[in-house]
Length: 96
Image (cartoon, rainbow, N blue to C red; front, side, top):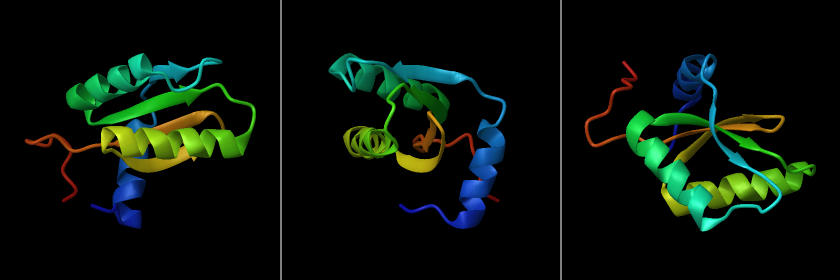
């Protein structure tokens, strides 16, 4: 599934007031962090992740790996915050 620009805009508006639920520190993307992100996506569908890495290219690689390993979709990244989305079997977020 790919998100349309309109869907991305809607998800960004929903994520605006949310706090990051996971943080990736100096140890990088560990299996424990991936499991935590996966469980948060099961509960919330749309989450923010804080990535404490100085290089933008490193942050982009981490976001791509998160999306690959958890099956989520990238919505947006601003600075050190990434927003990702994965629909539930019975989605709470409707794009209508």
